[in-house]
Length: 62
Image 1 (cartoon, helix red, strand yellow):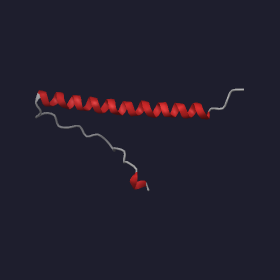
Image 2: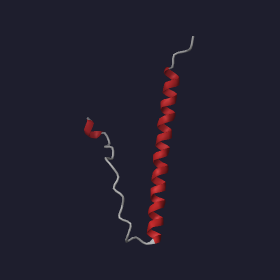
Image 3: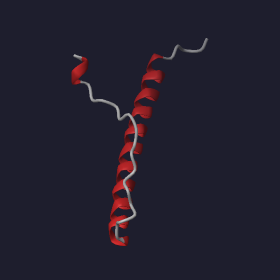
Image 4: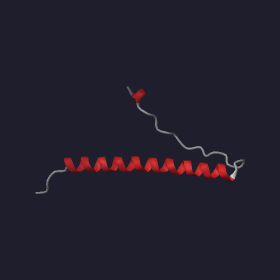
């Protein structure tokens, strides 16, 4: 069953950029920015879900 779960990345290996053109570098940056935005959206979704669950299961003060 654990084999079905997606694996977390173990690290990030930056690309070798020395031979890239300016246009290629701009495209690479745009791609990374989109990926960062996608990851941030998932974080926000998970935090909202967690907040809703915490509010649902919170004991009333009293």
